[in-house]
Image (tube, rainbow, N blue to C red):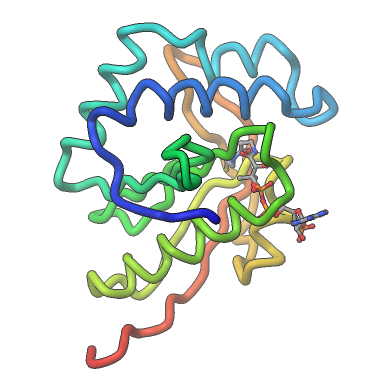
Length: 167
Ligand SMILES: CC(C)(COP(=O)(O)OP(=O)(O)OC[C@H]1O[C@@H](n2cnc3c(N)ncnc32)[C@H](O)[C@@H]1OP(=O)(O)O)[C@@H](O)C(=O)NCCC(=O)NCCS
């Protein structure tokens, strides 16, 4: 069973590990290895602190998917002010079992409850079909800034959220 809940600082290290593993398994037909290495540097105390800061930021909604043993299977981050999904990562060890879809649907519900009417995102090429199958439409090509001066090609996408009951 997969349970989605708000992320806590104690989850940060596991979230960084999932981020790293998920990016490193992306097929190099989408992005070269050098770019994947910039996208997700080797886990470190600095990377964990970066995630702790995001979780603590009230402008960010951070959720994790955990199994019955509290193992973190994936996570999602939304910038509430920009109505933008900034991150969705699933451990490759449990890929294609619906964890990403569950996290995304849960995040859309939470955003709807907070009054957001739309979510936008910059999809990596490997994930575009995943988002399309979940109702996101392409708004065109874009570039996603990475660390330093690096950028990666991406697809800007958007989806209207259902109003939450009572709003
Ligand atoms: C994109 C990502 C989050 C998807 O996570 P996931 O948990 O594998 O997603 P799901 O299992 O919910 O769905 C993935 C696909 O597997 C399929 N699937 C689900 N369960 C399945 C099963 N038991 N057997 C086979 N296929 C299955 C789904 O139909 C879906 O296919 P579709 O996209 O063609 O419709 C994950 O691949 C990931 O972390 N990628 C690397 C990081 C990344 O690119 N993140 C997005 C940045 S924009």
